[in-house]
Length: 311
Ligand code: NAD
Image (cartoon, rainbow, N blue to C red; front, side):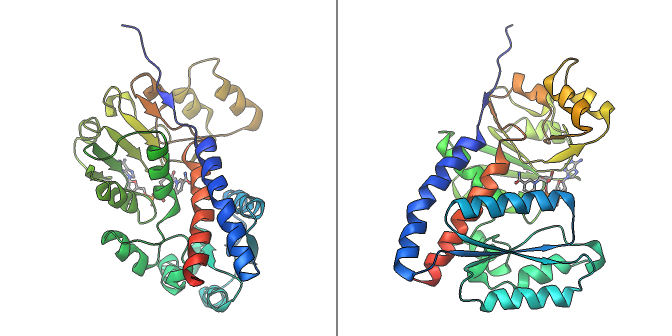
């Protein structure tokens, strides 16, 4: 039987469309209030991946006409110093949104992230992690929703993939991706199953899905046996592979990604094995799938927060 290849869902173009839709709203807000919507980003320490994410967020925000200020703290900063900075941004009249880049240095201690989420003013919580915003999401009246899962919904809707009446399986139950993802799918009338590290028969459960979302953090974990033929597979994972043997298990000899690996010494891959494209009906690539949507939704949330604070 001839193999089919999944339709690639292009996150760059969907993200560009979202960012374009944000532009007139930025201009209207600026004209009405005399200043652009403002985003305060906090970066603690010098984690190289976080540096890249933050740089991309600053650039995307600035290109869209937002005011974006990057506030840095050294890795040695205390949690109290971080909370004081968040409090200053809460009080700032020019910042409508606040984002504290994860992960925080482990020296800040367990529970530090939650303390930070709890401290951000819910109306400026463009990451959607404050308990008030999480609670509103559960009740179906969310205003600011976590950027990655809301980006996935935009991707599905703009790609004409039906959610209502579908069976959706989300692998991963984190506060920032898995749980809000499941809630958003449920609110759009999918029948949702949430899987995690203790789920029995994971592949079999996943293979019932019309929409399968992988948010695990393990390179190439979701193989073809997890996927119902024709299903839509959303790969949220961002995993840096530095072991050539792992790359060899993901890509066939001669693949361009292996050449990339040899050039750079590492590659970024998703949670979904590339072989899934022979089974799935549609698939998000990594990179270039969900990642750009996360940033686009951050810009959108910042404008939403600004508008809500200045009706
Ligand atoms: P996390 O570590 O907080 O959560 C991982 C989840 O996967 C957990 O709920 C765990 O139960 C589940 N899991 C782990 N091993 C499993 C296994 N063997 N079987 C089944 N479930 C298992 O991670 P996260 O913050 O939700 O991120 C997940 C992935 O998504 C990471 O690769 C992260 O880098 C990526 N991510 C991407 C974006 C983006 O913009 N594309 C945004 C956030 C996170």
